Length: 250
Image 1 (cartoon, rainbow, N blue to C red):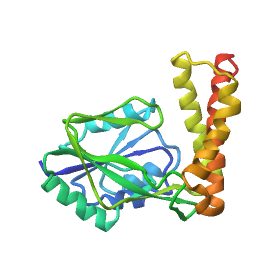
Image 2 (spheres, rainbow, N blue to C red):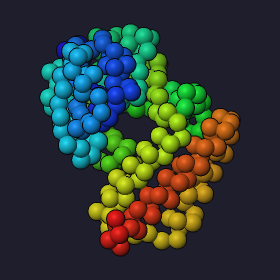
Image 3 (cartoon, helix red, strand yellow):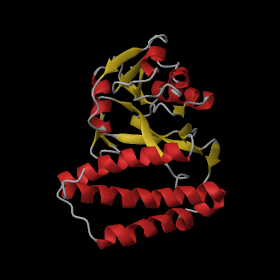
């Protein structure tokens, strides 16, 4: 009951995969579920005594649920390849699964790093994710990008945080924003959503204001400005891509 299966979804993560796997070395099983990487991700992973599953990517929820179904153990820990478990968090995770106190899963906070700098504000200071859970009571569903976990039971909170090295530089940030924008646009298209002036002219500047002012992004200096600006672009990009889909221009 106390054994843990750690799951790492990957696609071209040769920069991160070694440290990611080492980060969950405390787990009794490590599964890398790969969306057919074309770099050295699998070559590196194959040398590190992990289980590798290859599956064509459709959405994040389905990818993770598929890996969970192939996990040997009851407790699941999900790690993105650009995240690292600290030694303090490792100890807390191991203690949590030994004595879960009727919780079926746990929220964890994340320390975000942008181009090597720790981001203290910009809306990320309150980020919480469910990453440690019993597979019998939890499953991913919904949202093509920011997937959620449906739980059947109470959730606890761990004190220590994951280190999340989310964006190496601004170009990397933009590439991820474009990837997510297509996924979100396709989801909106399937739901029959339409594009209007509000989505193009109002929502992007509102998003900038929220991240830069309301969520205190200005306290993160230049990086906070760039994050707010890119979040505004993300909204604009999503609806421009939806417009392209609506007009069969993709």
